[in-house]
Length: 453
Picture 1: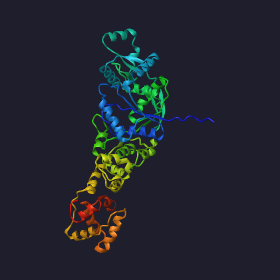
Picture 2 (picture 1 turned 180 degrees about the vertical axis):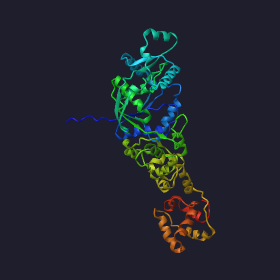
Picture 3 (picture 1 turned 60 degrees about the vertical axis):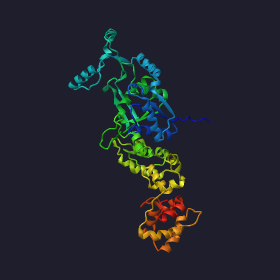
C-alpha cells in the first residue's frame, strides 16, 4: 500500500551582514527556525551579502554567534555573494521574456519626475519612459557614458495571497513602480536575489516583517515569471522601542550582543521577542521546544509591538528558575562554579542572572564572614555543638532543628535568622535545608562559632 509523500516545510532567515542583529531580527529568525523545528522541516540561514560596500565577514560571524546564543542551529548556510551565476542566469531569462528592461535615468531625474507627478496629484510611480526608448536612443545614452539599471515590468494587476498572519491580502501592482532588480554597476537587489534563491532552495514558507507586504506582491510576479512555486507568506508586526521608535541595526538598538552581555537569558529574549504583540502570554520557558509549541501566527496583532527591555529582568529570572542542571552545567563550569546539580537546584530560585550563582558558590566554598549579633552568640555556639555527626543525609537540616528547638527554646525568626546570618553572612537567600549539606560540617561549625570559613 502506498502512502502520500510527506512535504516538510523549508524556511529561511536572510539577514544582511551590515550590522548586529537586534530583537526585531531575532523575532523573524525565531519564527522561521522554530516553525521549521516544530514541523520537522529545514531552516536555512542565508546571508544577503551582495551589497559588498556594507557587508562584512565580521558581521556575518556575529550573526552566526547571535543565532547560536539563541539556540538556533541552521540546517544549511548560504551566501548570496557565492551565487551570482544563478542570478545572472535568471536575469538573462527575464530579459529574454521582455520582463527586465534597461532604464537610464539618474536619481536626480527620477526625483524631478516624482515631484512633478505629486504636483499634478498623481502617484509618484515610475512612468516607464525607458520602454519608449529606441535602440538608437539607448546607444546614444550609453555613448554619453550612461549605464542602465534594469527594471522588472510589472503586469499591473491585483496580486492576492492568503497571509498566515494578516489573512487575505491583495495589492494591485498597477499602483507600483517597476522595481529595479539590477543596479547600474551590475549588482543585484534583494527583491530579485531573494526570489531566485527561494525558488532554487525550495522555500515553502516565508515569514517576515510586515514592512515587506508590498514587496510580496512584486516578488510573486517575479516568481511566476520565472516559473517558480509561490511560497506561503506570513507578515508579522514589527517590534519597536518603548518610545515607539523603530529598531535599527545601524544604530544598535537592542542588539542581541548587548542583551547577552547584560546577562539576559537567551530563552527570555526569545520568549519576549516571539510573544510581545500577540494574544499569547509572555512567560518563561525551559527550552526552545516549549516556545515552538506555543507559536500561533494567527495570534499576532496587526499593530506594532513595543519591546520593553525592562520586562526582560523578571523574564530572565523566571527562566533561570525553570532551567534544569544540564542546561547550565557548561556555563556554570565556565564561571568556575562547582557543586553539581545539588548546588544548582539549591540556588536557581534566588538568581536574577546566571552570574549571581557565583555569589552563592562563594557562600558555599567560603570564606564567609559570619554575621553574629551579641545576643545570639550563645545560641549559635549551642547550635554548633548540636550539629549532627557525619555522614550527612538530605535530612540533616531537619534533624538539626529537631534537636536544637527544645534545647534553645527558640522558634520562627528567632531560630532561623541567626542561623542564616552566621552560616551565609546574608539576610536572605536559598533555603538552608539545601545549602547546609553543601557548606559541610567543618565550615558550618566554624562559622557558627564566629570564625570566617
